[in-house]
Image 1 (cartoon, rainbow, N blue to C red):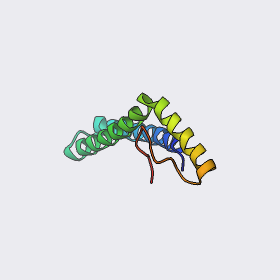
Image 2: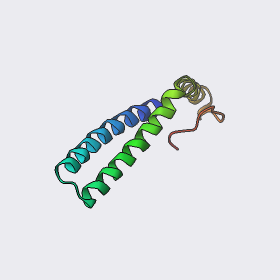
Image 3: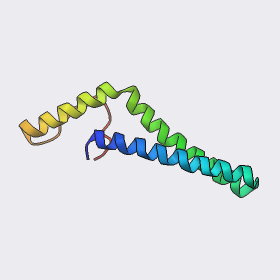
Image 4: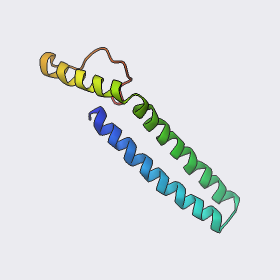
Length: 92
């Protein structure tokens, strides 16, 4: 899977986390109790994690795009991914 596919996956995951956090918020509004609060906190932590990953990629989108291009060229001409990257690999 390419970095661009993973970026799209990060976006979809963040969108799903927003929906789940919204549902947990509504649940907390309707029945305020410890279980609902814990669920809300958990969903907000998941959302924060997804948004942090997405922000890291978007803050460095030029570097990620360049590394993706270099990887593609390296695979074409040398048969393997480039050894050096300015950004961390999103997948092994």
